Image: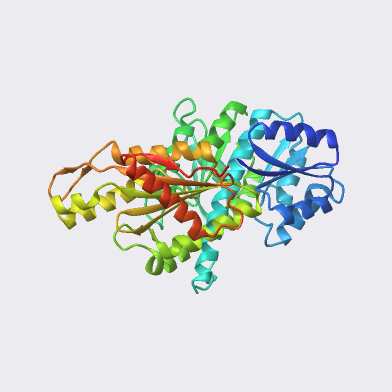
Length: 461
């Protein structure tokens, strides 16, 4: 399932049309006809995204967003406001009320799906941080201490310095932030924690064509900038360009003439969330690294994995979503240690951990269970998706030997995998240990059938 979306509109026909469009992309779609029922549904099902009609009975977008933001459990749910026409004042009013995005009728279906993908992805990242915080709390760590709220660092990257300074003049005095005009090269060169901007505002066209989108892609590929907010200015309003920008990782797109008021409204919503997430990541990294990480590979250990898995299982059952659990084991690893020595064996484990991590999502769990055995958990992943994921992990290890940096030798290694997919194995009431045990038995089948292969737990008849 791609995610859960709640449609709040007083017109049943509108809800049905939207449901058909979204269900085609495998979203689970819920419906509400008023602000009151919206809140009831949100508290019961915790959707990833809520689409709110301007005419919704009970106060419309303003009342709905205010009620959501007043509830700590609902405040981070993404929202799209639907306005009856393309009116700038209605758009700004919806953003001022707290909507993350605004669509106007008639809605382009491709734009709707692009916004949905973008916001559901953002919600998944927040859910992952929340789960980690809950696990840390269970291990006796306190919540992160409140920090001094620093100024947001904003970089303006336009097609010329003159344009950048015009943008800056419209913001100075209206936002209490550090604002710098940068070139594309300067934006890419900032790598340290203290100089990397929190927000990049990027023109879709810099030197030529749509090369601003290339910058968006580059920013998302750099570790220091991966979590920065990226807002793209699309002066032509080209909807295809907007979709491309969102799918490349932009958090928002400003279409048409550069609008300082709209930019400020988006900054007020996106920047604090970014700083909050940064503080949470920093706190969690410090707290969890000592108690719950494997000192050799830097991966989470068994203790953390079991606690984190319980959160994944609880969420999956509450939201009726599948998840996948894998146990992975290096084949004949004792021979590696015997032939090359334990030092190179350790090099192999470190490299395997890095390869596996590079081929998983941020929301996935990767842990070292001990020795040469690893565990992977994939939230919201069904059987067909698990087939591709498991085969990808098997090949990323087995298709290329490990290059030892200490002795300059190549060490061939393969991987056997056992896979358990929740939701199709009659797993109601099953404990975490039982799920791991079933995946472990599937792993054993991979070993006995010749190694270097993937075996799924068989569905009960």
